Image 1 (cartoon, rainbow, N blue to C red):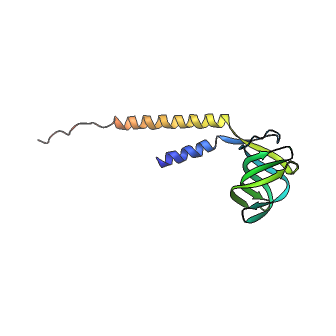
Image 2 (cartoon, rainbow, N blue to C red):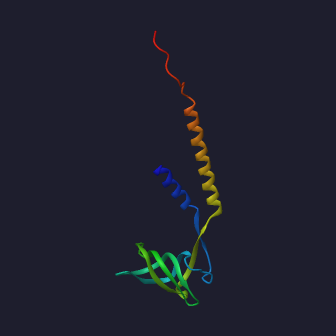
Image 3 (cartoon, rainbow, N blue to C red):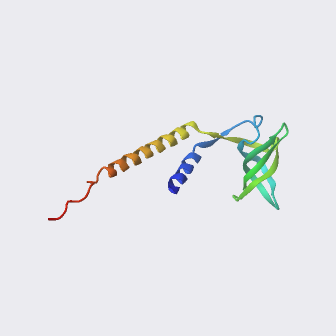
Amino acid sequence: MRVAAFSLVVVLSGCFSYARTETDALPASTEVVVTLSAPLDVRIEEITVHGVTLLEGRVAYADADSVVLSGTRFHTETGMDYPSFGSPVTLPRSAIEALKRKRVSGWKTALALSAGGAAIAAIVASVDALAGSGGGGRPKPQP
């Protein structure tokens, strides 16, 4: 049962993708990936991460001048990854090179649901075949 639940989570997590979006249309709590035009120093609780070039997180607030993210992952120019539990980061709009928004992918979702339905049908068919293969009843007594 645990394997099935884990498989479902893996398959459904693949139903999402990131699509390029404009910085003007950013409602709060939108999951985004931001590529910066120049490396930035970001403070994560007690430490400062230098040379951050890519940020992942949720939009906390957006106005005409800046975007405030609740960052969940920071990637540096040296290739290091720094996870976080929602450290706030204020990004001036001029520092944002590209912005991608998380969205549900229709074709990936349809493919995952089709594959899941086919797998369930195959399991049910194999269980029915195994259940019907026994002779059933008591064995005949020995003479």
